Length: 251
Image (cartoon, rainbow, N blue to C red; front, side, top):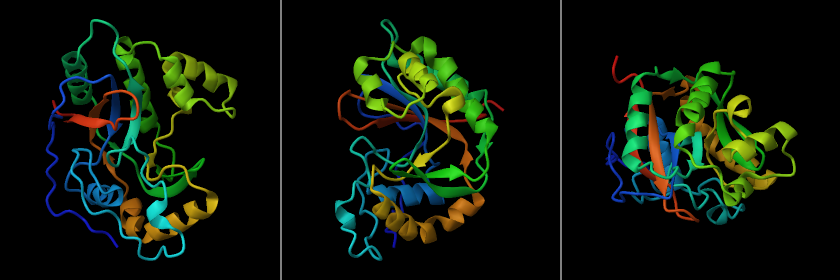
């Protein structure tokens, strides 16, 4: 079912050819060479390093118009989990400063095990999430928000609108106003997003097709062993990898 690449050209810390970006984000991306990384490259048909590959086969999904599904949102460049939503830099802060901060930040923190994962629905999206709560993942995400808040410009109206929803609680609206993302701090949940928004029927069919492929990965879980810095040019352009930095590198 999967057409996995045999050679992973994404190297640790590999730099994007672009030197500056309008916004930056901090994600977890699977370590190159792992089963999850190979799945992600095949599922999305491209990788965080921009390499385009043959995408996931539609075998077993006849009748669903699978090829036309919004499996990969336009801003996705590969498999990832969000730790710090995209943000613009404050005036006077450059790309080198945020890169240096993330390298130092990652070096002083330990890898975190997710434990077993499961396929879950997050609204109209299909995601991988830990079966049991992992406070250490939540704490790492909270630290990502706190440690980089002095780098982030106040969220713009466009950024707030991107995450706005009539279903947000009053507390989530306060988080959205402050951070440009309503799902931070106590509202954060570690999620590896697999699809764009789908209707319930398509979510079920895609989940059924993916589970045999992901069952072994989910059973063992993954190790969040690094944090990746991404950047984009603003607007609809995809996020691009700037570098992946290992957690606990100084120990």
